[in-house]
Length: 332
Ligand SMILES: CC[C@H](C(=O)O)C(=O)SCCNC(=O)CCNC(=O)[C@H](O)C(C)(C)COP(=O)(O)OP(=O)(O)OC[C@H]1O[C@@H](n2cnc3c(N)ncnc32)[C@H](O)[C@@H]1OP(=O)(O)O
Image (cartoon, rainbow, N blue to C red; front, side):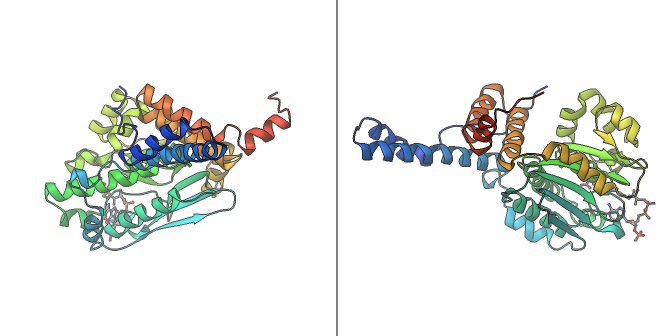
């Protein structure tokens, strides 16, 4: 079943006044007015897209009683590990969960750092792709059990869950084509993190396991909702209610992953190569492709169509489009 859209696109209140000015200018005929109207139209179009992008960023805001800074302060009490980001000239970033002594479990500071890194990626103008991986030959074993024990009230648990849902939703909405490189174990919140990527690859000996049931939990970082989108309700119910290990062949068979890597010792290079087939091309076009897919998967049809039209407007007549036309590009 299609998910209810998280956002509705409407004319923002703050733009009421410029729209009125535009109506006024539309009635005027002097050259200067025409130029002003044209500039204003461009500004409004840009503002509408920017506004729309901001609206799409977070699920929970202060209107939901969610205060990001307060949560960050709380999470910062549980320290350890890091989330590292490296960006390369080919436009592919690598995000590494780095806490190998605890199988890359998420401490509080890592949750804080993950959101900071995602914000950096939102601003990466030259970015086209992203690889999410864990250090030390394993992916991620979910939240750090030491921190979890200290956040035992339902209220606090829900705040942490809102924080991680915001972060992983922003990750999934990045205008970058993302892939989770699952090596070793992706457990609990780690399995959930993998579903926030556009694609998943597994190394031969790895496993994905939604262990939440055995922890007396259900997924809370948005992993259940995303899993249903990826493999459907029946398979999701099987994985969540059995808490079984899913090996690479099973994962490929049910459509949870996109490929199994070779048994070679350079899975990161292999993932980079695999991802490059999708990130080849001009940055504005790759980013626009990801944006139309995000709107298609999250919005209802009419809203998605309007968003698609707006994004189309950002590439139509753009440098890549003009170059392709001038070269008489053929697709043989
Ligand atoms: C919504 C998300 C949800 C939530 O809590 O909110 C979750 O993420 S639930 C899932 C939480 N994760 C777990 O329950 C994992 C528990 N750990 C294990 O099952 C195993 O440690 C395993 C399978 C990850 C790895 O087993 P293996 O035999 O290969 O290694 P060790 O058990 O010796 O682990 C090495 C070292 O890592 C520590 N470790 C592993 N996972 C965590 C974790 N999630 N939090 C804290 N520490 C973790 C483990 O205790 C070992 O440390 P040591 O000091 O040597 O005891």
